[in-house]
Image (cartoon, rainbow, N blue to C red; front, side, top):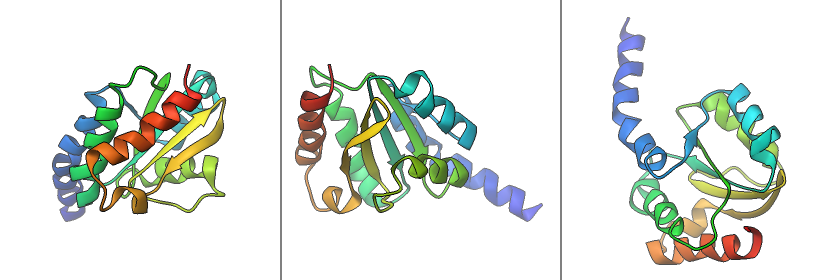
Length: 147
């Protein structure tokens, strides 16, 4: 009973953090099956941006606002997905299996083209940078890889 109450409280606390991304067009992937359907199916064709979301301060103050800002660029990814590290653990682990050669990082941004990773922005590139700099990391990649 107490564990269920804790889970419900945590879900209520992180919902606004989820909403920041879904309100700008991201689709949440909460299960491994949803991850596979997105990253192996139609979502693997063209460009895909996967955001590994997090509850940390750099996600709230930098990562989520920067990715929202980046979507104002002329070129943007065709598909926008997100998993939530620490919340949807199985989905996050499954998403990371698509780029297991890269170290896990939360928050992070992974740009894929036709199912292959072409660019990643890690937490250490987010922390200590401005929204504009982080957004520029993304828009530079969009300009290079997105149609």
